[in-house]
Length: 592
Image (cartoon, rainbow, N blue to C red; front, side, top):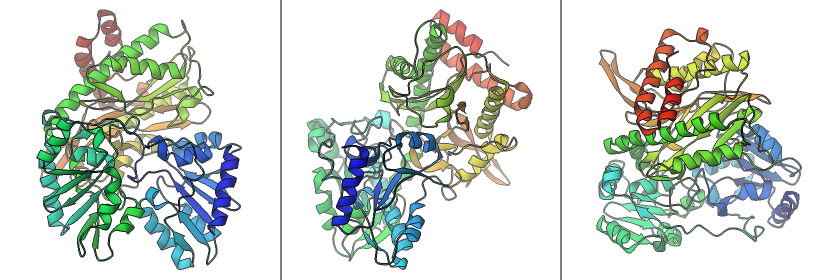
């Protein structure tokens, strides 16, 4: 079926169920950001492949609500699909809820598949729509009957990481969580988010592309833990190791039965952002629900000494791969055909040469010229640009290693840079340095780091539409909560030993995009009469293009930071390069 035929069939299903508006969320029962193919409902019905968006369909209108990262991409992918782009004002907001209150009438019905909608969104829909007399059905799946060639759920093998890699055993993590639950007065705790489960049980797999997680659920009580997983994914040795840690293993599909069987009058701790609405409603009515962020989400965000040690080693490995790639690019540009897709494949090859490489941490964004202005661009056969000896090339990429996760963005000039490109590049670099070098009091939130980082751009009336930074896991998801550097994070304080990206950008649609990204870890700084201060240690080890810098726009301390950073890059990377590569890197890291 074409997208228009799929939309017509969906509307016929809506008519049969007396549904006036149907919501399709980009999620799975684990409320994942990145999904197994089985759950890519939005891509199947509309053609949109971005990682954030919601479809809302009525008899007269079908729209995709998404944020500025995807405006250009969505407009292209939705062309002639029957769906229209609706531009979100705030990233992640359910602004379609207000649209529904205006569009629908009393006694109309809104429906969605509750397994694919987080509790928070369902609660907001109820809060906004029910006072208007609009009915809500949260148990309607209209996709499964239409999507007849849908992929099966993944069945990749899983494995456990040793304590010498994770720095903390599964039994220790379970005890920590149970102690927190006791303090919160909770007797039961449901965990659905795959990164949390992977961290708790020191388990990794390949059920989701680029994310080393395993489809599973977990249920805690005061003295017992159940892991719901397809046991065939685990070796007998791994199963024994989990049982020795006090974990009972149950079939993946038994989670619904287990939730329904929670003892009456239990106090159930549940994260409304990281659990689906359907499973929330399965909790017996006699139970008291305590809502809050998963304890494991906070615990895994604060890296232990072992994780940080491995991560620092991983950054050197990744820096070696990137250095070899950029050396190769310079030597071959203009001499052979190099496309955006070539860039992604070649970069993966260089990473694969490093010990412990498992795969990419996300699909490489290699945006040449105007494609760099699309923050989440991925080259396809139709869009693939051939690199020439002019213009800017933006590369945002990352690797998954058994010793850590990387995420880095660099922009290089392929020749003939313009004054506008130099100015924009220098201001983005200045913003990145501001973010990396800031000192802030304990208790500072993400929105404050976001504003500090943006100031050099704001001073020149420039801005960008995405957040400044996101948490990064340890050989886990490249996007990890609960902390984030954006305007919306007014609640989560930046604690020590959190790994976060700092990635300001600037995008000129139709021309070029610039983003420079390093990963940093927060660390204790001065303890003064004004309180404890925190600063950042830069983790990423890779040279930053200097040919595009306009020094007149930088203060002395920006220049000093860059020169010191480049000294460290050369010192750490050069021993792993051959003589020609070392000579090249020495030039790239020369003081400006």
